[in-house]
Amino acid sequence: AALVASALTANAGAATLQQVRVGGVIFSSTANYSHDGSGTDDFYSFTVPGNTLNVDGDSIEFYVAGTIPASLGNKQVAIVFGSTTIFDTGTLSTTSGADWFIHGAIVKSGTNTAKAIVVWTSDNTTLSVDADNVAVSETLTGNLTLKVTATATVAGAITGELMKASWQPAAPA
Image (cartoon, rainbow, N blue to C red; front, top):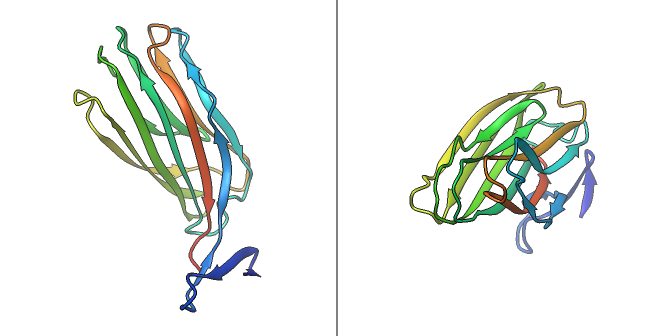
């Protein structure tokens, strides 16, 4: 392993000279959250330090999981990066239970611009798989919050069970 241009590099295998840059976990929580039935709650939230997305191709990859208990009432999950909503389920009105999972990435694409790709899925066949590809225009040199929010009209109608986020550097030039 070596430090090259402020990024740790290593070989991509024992028999290759292909160099890879090494990233790592920047946030992890297994705290359980249950919506209180009023307004919008932040389930998970953390600050991404300025310049984390410093080079075009640097990315933050994340996943979030939770449940929708069998209950009445509308529920909704959103992912917000800075002031940009990069994913929103819209109103979910199912009354049968479900496990849900979100996987996404925010990839720097230019000066103060990035692309966010997010996929939602659940084990409930009445809830469709959803994917969003969103342009992000934020000041990437400043601190930004990445958060998961939930809205529900009945207490306990949606829960969050875990979130993990990792920083991945751009590929070597």
